[in-house]
Image (cartoon, rainbow, N blue to C red; front, side, top):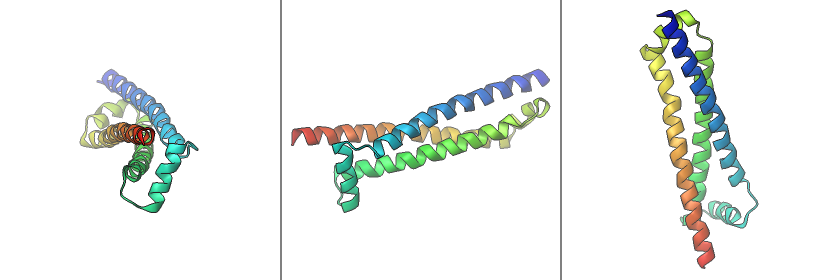
Length: 136
């Protein structure tokens, strides 16, 4: 059982390390687009400032929500990683298989999935916004 706990702990810690790197790239992409000086992004920011309910306004809101979700997922993932990294090998099997371990492993995963979906949503909305700018 001791080796099972050690192996399980190694797998969980490696998963959180990889997910943290992925989320940091996702956050940097979100923030890079939000603060981009491109014409389409400037129009989106202007539409958000005006408050009119247009495609550009919705795109900006979804991009802002994606930034918040990605940052929340990054913080939750890093927190869960730091909780699991301090577990001893003897207690890892018990804690990770308990309801506490299950709940602490679920929230970062849910936030990662919602971050990915929101990322694809704002990418699609930007594509629609860019297409509408080109056609007009």
